[in-house]
Amino acid sequence: MTREVFKQKNGIIGKSQELNDLVDVVIQVAPSDITVLIYGESGVGKEIFARAIHNASKRADKPLITVNCGAIPEGILESELFGHKKGSFTGAIDHRKGYFEMADGGTLFLDEIAEMPLTTQVKVLRAIEGKEFMRIGSETVTNVDVRFIAATNKDLQNEVDIKHFREDLYFRLKVVTFNIPPLRKRKGDIEQLADYFIQNYAKDNRKILPVLTNEALHILMEYNWPGNIRELKNTIETAIALSKDEMLGADSFTSLLVKEKTYEDHRNLPVFLRKTPEEADRELLYRALFEIKKDLIELKDIILHQQKEVITNNNYDNEVLPLDEMEKGAIKNALDQTRGSKRKAARLLNISERTLYRKIKEYQLQ
Image (cartoon, rainbow, N blue to C red):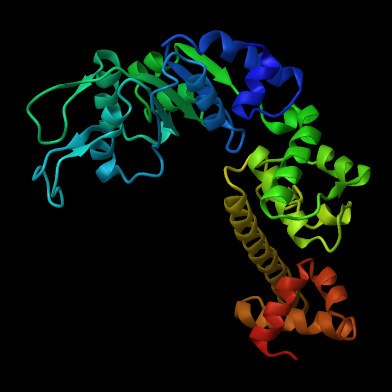
């Protein structure tokens, strides 16, 4: 099977050299039963490659069972993987097959393997090595013929070093290792991916096919894509949904892309450098929490600074003013000096306008 046919058959979009090199290795390894470990940031398409490996193997006519190890609570993960007998624990009202047994003859894809608890890792290792396990509550061994693929966005060697992952399971999984490069390292794929997502969205929603302008494409090419292909897909679909015509220009994307920030100043505050957040929604939450923390630190420093000035100017060697009074006075003075201009007052106080508005409302200054 040629590389292009393989990509087309498995929904792998892109033409970069990095992607083509990876596909060539996948084509070579897929027909065997060898265990594969896939590395890659969130959103790069680890499950797509796992499915491609399965589809190109001799097990393609058997099931591919995908298990997200990070999405299943620790208390029931073992039951989900190995199954249980009726009455083996509270709530076990019937016999149940686990994912290992469901994947018999096919492939078991253990996604986010680094999130698996250490106690479960022991049993998974035994099942992989011996291709046998026992259901919870059972006294007999169940044999299975399963190929294993695992994936993670963490450095498993580091997880081993800090005792979060078993070394023996790590070595058992890393027989063949793939590293899917993030989108920022294969930007040559962005145009083809964008066209693919545009066509799919238009077809699924029965819309006229939008046109992506060169200016818009330039913005997409320059962006760092911390959420990788998943973020690109979501951004394209949102831009089309919000578009008032069939033209996707620069304005369609500038408000949708989260700007990266590096925050650093003379007070030795922590440097915030967001590089590769795991999820787009988590990114936004972390960013908002950081901004709030930054604003609080700024206000605290300003208040302490002005408190020192008041004490110095009035020779109050033994008097300490309440922080809320100092804060209120500092904001009032800034508003007076700027004749009520909140933008100038926020700049004078070295805080964001959002924080200033919140404090004005809190102290009922207007």
